[in-house]
Amino acid sequence: MYLITTLILAAVFRPATLAAARVASPFLPATVGLEPNESDGPRRTADSKDPAMPAEVERTLLLLGVRAKIGQLMMVGFEGTTAGSDARALIAEYGVGGIELLGGNVRNATQVTELTASLRELARNSGAPLPLLIGIDQEGGWITRVRDGATHLPGNMALGATGDPSLSFAAGQVTASELRQMGVNVNFAPVLDVNTNPANPIVGTRSFSDDPATVASHGSAYARGLQLGGVLAVGKHFPGHGAVSADSHLTLPVDRSLVGVVRNVHLPPFRTAVADGIGGVMTAHVAFPAFDPAGSRPATLSRKLVGDILRRELGFAGLVFTDDLTMHGALAGQSAADAALEAILAGADIILVGGPLDRQRAIFERLYAATQDGTLPMERLDESVRRVIAAKRRFADPGARPSERHDGAAVAAVVAERALTVLEAPRQAIRSGDRVVVVTPDVVRLVNGRTPLAEALERRGVRVQEVRTIASRDPGLERARAEAVAALASADAAIVATWGIGPAQARLAQTLVSARKPVSAVSLGSPYDLAKIEGVDGRLAAYGYSPAQQQAVAAYIVGELRPTGKLPVGISPTFRRGAGKLGD
Image (cartoon, rainbow, N blue to C red; front, side, top):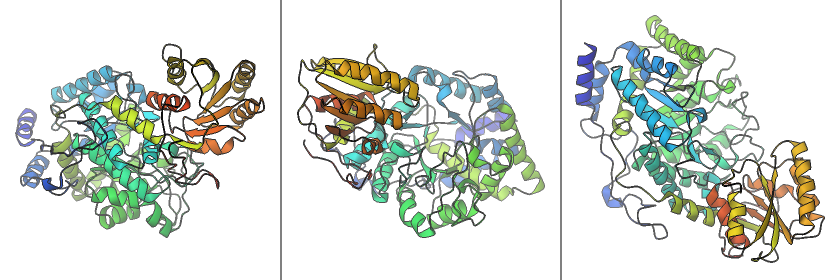
């Protein structure tokens, strides 16, 4: 009977085709940055369907038993770079409908391609009634799970600094093309958080801006690029994670903003994305006392925020994903199993949860028990399963591939160059033959023993002595400070690259400034770093440390590039949003 059910489902489960008509963008390669033509009709929303969609969804739903339905509501993680025993158990025994790939699952693009193929084969061989959703965090910037064999695109704040949403669309296209080639059909992106708190420890450069309109325009453009390439976009973290000072991986942050602030600052990007057809939204493990007077319930578990505001007020008909329930901010003092049930009752459709296997099993069995005792009504369960089936028809076809591949390196270079923001220009460019001390944080990966920044300068004839710093440990920075001071004695200038600057990094920069030689500060991460260093000869925001961004920095330093980027966030009373010296 199970085989017959699977064959029937295969017959009715025909994924919808993707629109392909595009118009060209004037500054990118011909196959990149192409938006749908207005003549193609309205943008496809998450719940728009071909005429056969409702009937096929209902036929599929009727063929699923209760436990099969519950499996479709779970997207699980596991350890390792191959499909081991836990993955096999989750798929074969529990019929989970989705897999989330985390950093520990990834080595490179080839390995991810092999892993996803093995997961799909495992699902087929287990008689899975529907194909898997396979998701990953491939945001660009520092949250880029797959780097080897894929494009390390600049992140969202760099895109915001360009002032050009068509570049965000192009980034979405490139990402979708590469993910589909790897067998991934869900991207937990874009980040739609408005970063209003400079001390936010988890959002920062993952945000496009501290301006709601900028986040809305760039976020929706990125999501369109993803979805036109066949990858489900999941905007996060509803209703906003940008105003808090705590990390929801470790605790429950509390956003004490008034209702009007949340509605006018943090909700607009989600409202725009929903209107533009985004297929998924991820909830925030953040409490909002203005909406939930108890003050200890994360948005993930809030019927007011998910059911009333996201579903009814914003009209979102796509998939609601929880953020991972392994995070401490999700639990509100209860078990992960109880939190999962509460999230589904609040309006979530898919529970994200990493290992261990015992926790995942407990969630499955808690949801099943709730259907048996009436706590989870069948009508509520079927409502979510219908959405999952519809999304899988559109995005989960394992054989579908984009019609064209995009030049990721070209897009990364254009974004990096157009994002580069000069707040204070050095008095003179560095020339071929000059001796320069380059201080770089250890988060920047080495290629053949050099950072891309040092290598790009050396390629232009600059004689570089590179000093590596340790981003967070003062003893390592003290060693680096002594090394940099000694090197600067025989050098012409210094470049101090920062990432998450702390007091010791700032002291290192100030020590070099006191040597009375030109010192330029370059932020390879948060631009807020640049407000913490005094007396430097130049200040430059790159917004990230991808190879393309480091190469753009080198091109500017030697006078080859005339940056046009503008700060998408205010970093101080002197350097407000929109600051940037054009063409210097």
